[in-house]
Image (tube, rainbow, N blue to C red):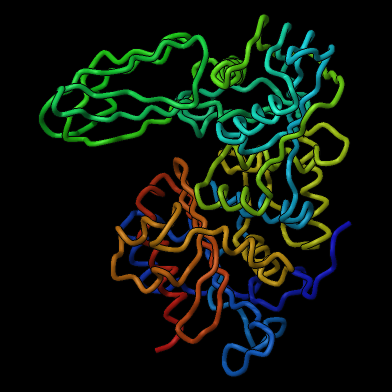
Length: 487
């Protein structure tokens, strides 16, 4: 059941449907310099209700004509918001599931245990945990061993059936399947289906140590690579890496000592084998014995409950999704909207759940078109008005602090930290919390800004144009304009 809160977004008094307003001159000039017509842009800057007890200028009520939107430009035009769509997914999840929601990874035995040996199979059943990383998997393995299972005379069976998913083509979006952002969701997602390589120079030996995590069984990874002198440059290209063999990683080039320590995250070329390989390596690495294999089940199964591993709470997951713009975590969360009960999650059913929630919360306000929850999509659409309405409602929600604190601080952290590099003197630094979005032909930003007056604003800027890659200065100017609300 959905909670009822004060304002109905469908009845807000913001002047979004009024005659078009001119864009602020500094925004219009930045767009012109980028070669982006104003018709390819949608923007809203709208004041939010003051906190209880506030007085003065910032205390004007938002629900009436006394406090219309400061800016409304093409507010009802459907636009691709890129990763700004994560705001829809994360707020819906907080509202429907609550910030204390967690996922359970359950472990069962199929057989009997005697003198530390499981005579039979161990079953690990996922529930879609968005962040089942190495540390949490190590805790789960420790819990299994604490229950007296030190050796398995059988197989480790993996069950990811909590999600009903179509085949995933990691190359489909941009023909770059080894980028971690292209990893597909999974009911038992282990370490984001990725490997992280760390390169540690040893100048005395003129060698470079290669470290990798998580541990992975049956994959040869070189312990060292040759060192080079000179400028760092494009160190990834100079390594001449080959990740095409699921069982072997090679580096045919050299690594410049001047690069210092660097990390490179790469999606495993055979994603279906990633979880079995990692779980086997970690089980054996913890001292566990296994006579059989680690393999996927082709149908749901159960056994005798042994232990349950718990995820981080949703509040922490939402912070990771919005601050780091993690696509696969957002998709896991979106799928959970239809799997959190007794069902099996699917993109279609989660889309239905989100549309029902949107109608309940926002009435006739245009419903975003959400296909996977992450914004990594050519088909996703939202209006600036709808996103601003979501930001307003989220600010009034009982979980407002959790949602707001999940957004990167402008110029400080997450994906919004780049503002400081682009505009080091910007008044927006430290005075806005923003989710950014970037795709080919798309640049977007949405979040909260605090004006000089003390007024808080919902700010949305969406650009859909082939020159969107040059639009960041214009979006920066939009945030700065919102902050400078006094002469």
